[in-house]
Length: 335
Ligand SMILES: Nc1nc2c(c(=O)[nH]1)N[C@H]1C(S)=C(S)[C@@H](COP(=O)(O)O)O[C@H]1N2
Ligand SMILES: [Mo]
Image 1 (cartoon, protein in one colour):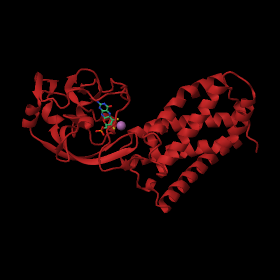
Image 2: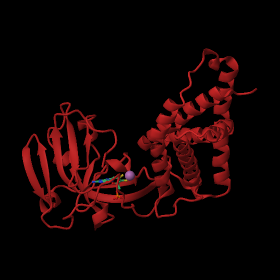
Image 3: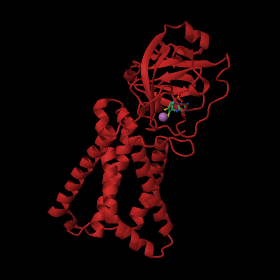
Image 4: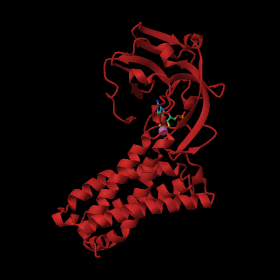
């Protein structure tokens, strides 16, 4: 059956949107039971690869027309290819590091996000009205078939990775690779603050006991909690460590009552938690029996077992009970 250009364009758009959404959703994955999100992202990525064949004639005739916006489309195509290639290279483990010193997964995220505005423009500028008969039975069957093929392709690729003993076989359910030490990681554009080694570092706490300022010695005098937990960054690495410090439950009073607790960094980076999520959170001052290192959050960082790395606020200077609900924050940090 010939697939019309309009239909292949639409199919590609739908699948690319699925890829982007599942990619973002995979940043929430922490447990083995959620690994299908990452798997679905991979399969949807393979479906995009499969659809390129149908898109190729569209691209070719588009390139023949000398529209000024042609170059934006070329950039979109290049970003798509880079995002697909970096995804395959990371998940198979064929190249976990990219030239230039960044992780391949970093490029995967960067190219994936960069193509969003271009894709939005492309979809609007080359808008096509869906027609009722686009959804006829044969097309629905084809789309279903594409889903089955994508799943089969994903299984075949995973099988090959395992059979070939590639590093990708050792990925965590999140898709990250375990390594001996955490890697100093900045979410977006944050900076290591000054004074991380200053003896005068303080953590201010505001809760039902009123505002108070704790010196490092005050923190050290509180009951100590030790926890073994994996920090798993969305840039593709993870590390299991023994952390020790003060449990947030031992520090903050009266967080319940529908409010929230903000953990704030010296840099302004912060994350907000619901009162019933404090259990298990730790203000850590040591890792593997050693004081934290500067770029890894010294002298005090948050340890948030069961949450991805961006929740693990480094260089903590304040813990505050607030009236705002816990969802009152950008879903992802902005710095
Ligand atoms: N203040 C601050 N805290 C932060 C970040 C940041 O950029 N600024 N990055 C987060 C991210 S994305 C991760 S994965 C972990 C990384 O911790 P590490 O640098 O100790 O490996 O810290 C988190 N805490
Ligand atoms: Mo991260």
